Image (cartoon, rainbow, N blue to C red; front, side, top):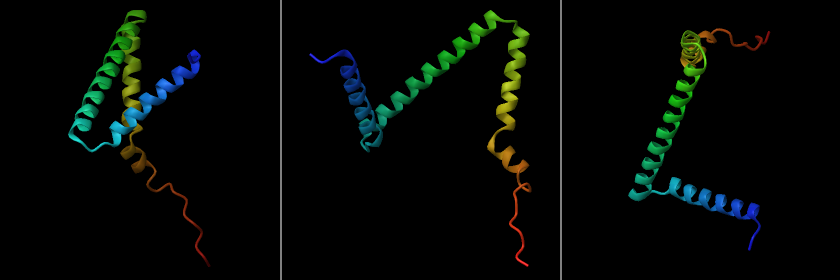
Length: 99
């Protein structure tokens, strides 16, 4: 029997090959499985974020959490690509004019 570590690596390699084949597949079954996987992973992430948010609220003051959440939302808003591109529009260095 194989030691535990190489067995785990073989198993993860097999799982990665299955997901890779699924991701590049063009059949209707592959499309449905990709949709199911994306929905389930999204549900897991949403539940984890909601639980983390609930736990943070229970551990700290409510106003502090709301304030930090507002700061985070504003950071995401103002760091979005369209805001950065508009802010940096005329800040690019121009090459010197050949005289």
